[in-house]
Amino acid sequence: MDKITEKLIRGNEQFVKKVNSNKEHLESLDNLKIKQSPAILVFCCSDSRVIPEYIFDQFFGELFVIRTAGNVINEGELASAEYALEHLNIKYVLMMGHTSCGAVHAAVHNEKGRFLDPILSRIKINVGETCDEKEASIKNAMAEMEYLKDKFSYIDGVTYKYALYDIATRVCKIY
Ligand SMILES: [Zn+2]
Image (cartoon, rainbow, N blue to C red; front, side):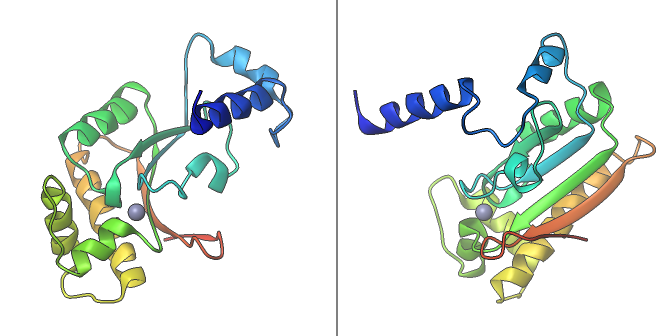
């Protein structure tokens, strides 16, 4: 067996034995067997360092999470958001960008990809001429939040926020 598979299995064993969990209420997973009713929709980057459940110290069943490179909304993400807002009746949406984002970096530097271009060009439109990558990540998150807000404007009572998670300090600033 390869090392990564072993590592994953070992990690899962730890999880099952509750050794690694900082939560003591794994028993509450039983309550989630039939249905979920998360209160928060978090939209964030696929970056391996950006894990909302860790960042916000949330447990299973608490966050409905949609992730794409650069936290950009495409067709599938829009469909997932519709499910979250219409069927799970989530009333709080957080669009979270982060520092050191590869997608934002690529867009700011006008890089090209094979399949990445729709994401990169969209980020480019969102950030305009901004060269500062942290500033660009904030602008990108704000623009994507506004896009989502506009798409689902027919649903009342939803709070929309955007945020920047700082990988270096681990602080997430919510705007
Ligand atoms: Zn990113």
